[in-house]
Length: 442
Ligand code: EPZ
Image (cartoon, rainbow, N blue to C red; front, side, top):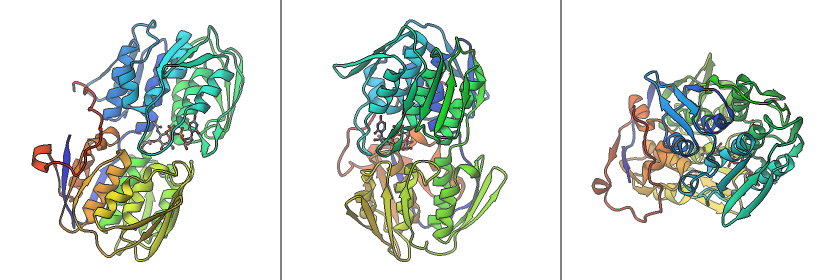
């Protein structure tokens, strides 16, 4: 288990590029199961989660490799496998996105129910109801979803749940509907940019989809999909995390390879917290001089502030000149990062679904333990600002969703080193963490 050692106190300056979007790449990779021809994804990030899904797809007859330019090539060599291996699906929830494509293209799918998660309750009832509406004969047996359908039929599907729509649920149902007979209307569809990107990929492969970016999608089924070449959108969550690094260290950082229009609510939050934000063509520059101002933040479905930056904003607001409140309407229980931030000196109290943050002048380095991907990012940000040295145990979560984040931050002036578990000493407590997937051969 990797650890990170951070020497805090450096103001970050410079320019850094965001990578390709993890949460667009994963459902698009799963959707490659639908395609009869080769798929080439450019700008797909090098991440543990991408490697895990590539490994799962290999078990499902989809070969993948990276070329020297870094493009990810996927091609179906065998359409007979229909069972996803438990270990791989349990390692990464997004693997559940293979359900819809497998069912639609191969007529059968056996996929383990995704495991528990450190960010809260994550049911899949909307996924299953949506596929059932398309005519799937679906049951759950010994922890597996077993779905069969000789031919899916277009239908009306509602995907809005108690906490808004479901992103990967929309991916599953959208992917299945493109090969259903007739027309499917999805209401309450997720409008996240990652779903729009999936839709654009499917259209490039021959699908007929109307309404992308709205909560109502109309899909006219087609006989089959060809292959496609597609450039994955920039990762808005990574971009926000890099900008937060500038804000928390009171530096000046420009992030390139970014779509500012995907971050409107986040940029508004930065401005409300007193940072200066300049938006250019595929570029955002953030400058911060002083302690952040306190703000109240509610994480919401797109176009709201994403739940995937809630923990990182909490690290920033821990240093605000006053009291802030953060709530998360998507994952109300997403709060494992609070205790670890408190070890660095943050004053955060949980009251019902609210996090009440009393800003402090300074954080102090300490040993902390990562609990999930975005919590690890929050601890890195807090370590950048803390006085002295911070050691983050079990930091391998980071590479699940950020390509070389420590190295990118070091380019901006941070002092982060990867250290072995023995150098780091035993963490205060050890969590059952995921074994990193096999990596691509470069
Ligand atoms: C996607 O997860 C993202 N993952 C998450 O990013 C992100 O936090 C989340 O969407 C919300 O934006 C990927 O895209 C791979 P949901 P997903 O289904 O699709 C409830 C990260 O850090 N719900 O949109 O699993 C659910 O409980 C990850 O990159 C149901 O009620 O999330 C939650 O409250 C973490 N029934 C809300 O909907 C269902 O069938 C949103 O969940 C499905 C979900």
